[in-house]
Amino acid sequence: MHLPSALVAVSALAASCIGHSMLSKPAPRGNIEWWGTCAAGAGCKGPCDAPKSNSTFSSIYVPKTYVKRGQELEVGWNRLNHPGGFVRLALVPFDQSDDWTAFNDNVLKYTCYETNCGPKDPSDDQFGHLNGAGDAPCSTKVTVPKNIPDNTAVTLQWIWYGGGVYYAQPEASFGEYYGCSDMIVSGGPSSDEKPKADFQGGDVTYPNSNVCKYWGSNKVGDCNFGDKKPNPIDGDLLSQSLEPCIRGPELKGAPYGFDSGSTPPESSSDASSDASSDSASDSTDATTGEYETSPDAPEVPENSDSETTDYVGIPEEPSKCITRY
Ligand SMILES: *[C@@H]1O[C@H](CO)[C@@H](O)[C@H](O)[C@H]1NC(C)=O
Image 1 (tube, rainbow, N blue to C red):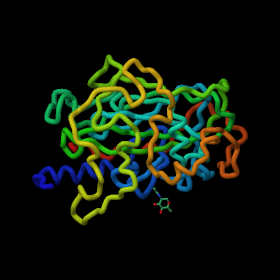
Image 2 (image 1 turned 90 degrees about the vertical axis):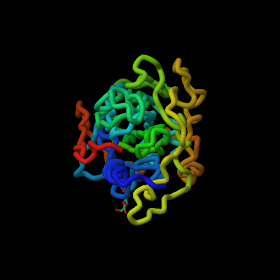
Image 3 (image 1 turned 60 degrees about the horizontal axis):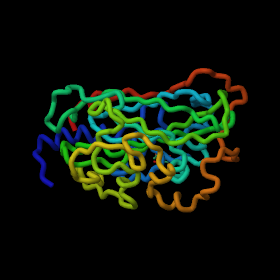
């Protein structure tokens, strides 16, 4: 592919943006291999930005995030100049956080990527209506499930998929991006009922309908690039990613399994992902998503009566990311 050199120059800036963390709160696990955010296009297989073994969660030196059952937890991410797509949130015991099947079976919520955020200049139509640059913070709220026992270490997974305008191409979609945040559930009202996956639509482009603007596919797993890995060539930025995922026009709709009237899917695992098929296939379905004590569980302080959610280490956005794709 031949791009004008000016475009390649700004793309270089964008490439370093794509690399850093999109999930901003609660604080992501973080990783060193994928420059902060784990991109399927860069060869990351998820389900988290870094594996469980890389989490600093067990370290006594790292302050923990505490949440209560029934609490409305705010989850935030940065738009990073990219319009459209969906965000999927799922929560599993920390012990199961390397397991795609566990996350797919425990989806809490789907929402739009541009929930309450949008481009800096709404009149910039170069790449389509409301598809311009802008690194606004975006957020949604998710209810901490009431079926989690006290002092359980859990992992919240954030996925962005169906995003558009890959490298200034208005008809090219991004691959999936993954981020995870570890926390401890303690206190709050209990219930045995497992929460159902919910869809909350409405974004900057379609604020009053239960849909989102997206590109490519509305289904998790369609843009995970399977077993493929990129073959980076020195000096060729585009070779560092398998993206774009799907070519096609901007779309409007609900996530796979939902209609725009927000009917829950038959089963949350319908929206299953085939990424890292190894870990997904040899997991025991019967136990996924169950909250049991395991010898691998990190130390949980006995007296965790902290009322506030302690968001630690939220990184500042580098200024170089306020650039176009
Ligand atoms: C996990 O930790 C290992 C050992 O420090 C490191 O080599 C690897 O890059 C880390 N993985 C991620 C995704 O950060």
